[in-house]
Length: 355
Image (cartoon, rainbow, N blue to C red; front, side, top):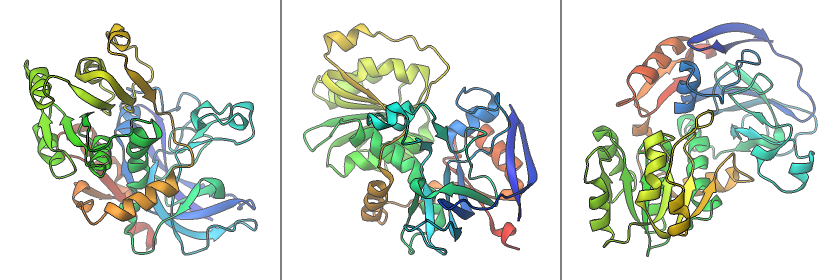
């Protein structure tokens, strides 16, 4: 069986190719893709600004924010049936190496694979993908595929709050640095705990949008007095919880100023491959508790249940600002790269591939 699949060969070198799919192994699932979001990390890899995408090894298929339909399952698969709507993990541990058996995070796996970033892993930017049962999760039948494509994004934000033990409640002020898709999922997650949520982003469009997705207040960090604004909102205490979602050098450096004493800090935004100057001494004098997020562990089912509870409170469909057919992937990346202020999420659809 042949499928048309995208391969990223290097910076700004994305090609559609016809590929012969291999026969399914007993533990594998053949998935027909129905929706795939273009993430900011996909854009950075495409632009050559990130070390996460490994086209230095070989061309790979991008796409880790995907949803599709299981069309065939291997002989040993029991948790997924043909016809199920499914999504899947991004960071894939082997479960067998010393670090996996020691209970460490998937990012510690000595044989780690990463969906949509490596040539040894599948990606969602293709007509079909093949993924093992261990990493595949069923979503409710009444979900749209585009909502399903948000599960991976929401999983990162949801884990960034609760998997990182920042544990906000109604007594806390939470500062979310970055109002992009991850920042919005963090804001929604923290709002469900009735915390006071401040979203910090230099783009006015993102600040205004955040008010619809959990933010009580929004702050422009490009203003010289923005820390004073946060101080006033917190009665001089600054934030009890800080979640850094921007991956931007200035955003990362600012968390040490935004955080109050004994703040719980979750670092979610990617900056791999760069050295970021920060005032690390404030970690000591503010007694900060800082946690990182490199993949999530056994978290997708919980994310799906959480999203099921809140999906009707927020307009998830409105977050998808641009839609492109998969065969127009070049146009989709052009918008994602050059219209960042307005392209909250560029979503690939696969209607034409059904014909």
